[in-house]
Length: 120
Image (tube, rainbow, N blue to C red; front, side, top):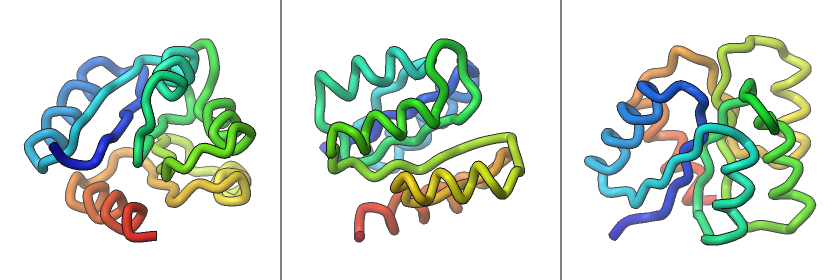
């Protein structure tokens, strides 16, 4: 089995499509529909990469990113968002995000970003 990835997005269709493509690329993929479920999964399993939407119900992506930092988790976090604001990108990187990708994103670019994060 490949590297473990947690994909967190509130869009069920996107979760299914991206999870299937990541699995086909050799990754072991779990998914969550919101930040609260993501935190539960992060407490249950050590993921190498977390793909994290910023705008979600319950806890948002920034809350989850802060959680990984506050709990000294070694997972690499890649932020995915439809928001284009520079300030949120800067805040994400300051909190330790490995990358910040705006939607819609190209799957090849996402796979490259995951590979770069795993090499760090």
